[in-house]
Length: 248
Image 1 (spheres, helix red, strand yellow):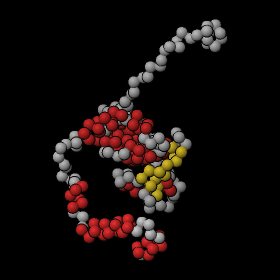
Image 2: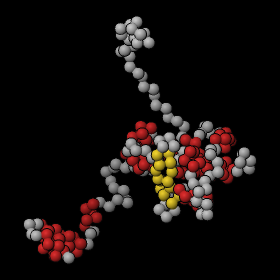
Image 3: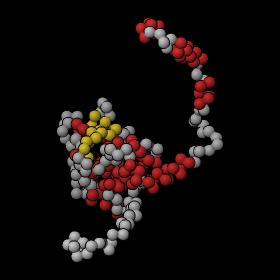
Image 4: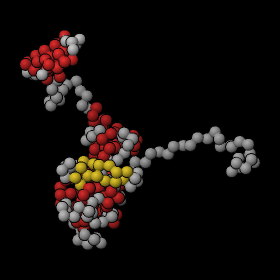
């Protein structure tokens, strides 16, 4: 302000640089904790509304990897059963995208399916904040939130070896996975350590060496490929019509 008003000619803090705060690693439930939370919610007879509804809502968050806004807005017509795709809309980025109908998610949506009402919401509630908090308290777990289950989904995908770019596409990101790599770098390191154990001087039992795979290829296939390749090289300067006649 003094610099702007001309009281001083130079800021005494001009040489200072902004200190980047340490990256916070938020609490993320394990898959077993997630399943325990869902079952705890489902077991409650009175939770303000239907316990099954709350449990299904939370289960969808963890199995689909979507946020509460996407889950609340999901309609029956958004689930394409033939193509096995789910179309959703990310309110934060104001953009639509599609995710696969994951095998782990399919049984839940089959239960929630309503063929005669395509415009009906899949879930009748907008959030499950209270049921999640109560379940975490009963199970003596950290106070997880809706976003915790989305982080769990991404963490599991990374640990299972799913390509980061694919995970980014599943979540409507258009940065090729940069945000996920930055946010989940601690998971990448742990996964990298496990993958490093595969780099031994031997071969796993389920791996066939390339040389062995080639030697097992039928001889007539190799001969046919070799013949076509040799002829193509020999007739490279021939007219196209002549070559097409030979191939036909």
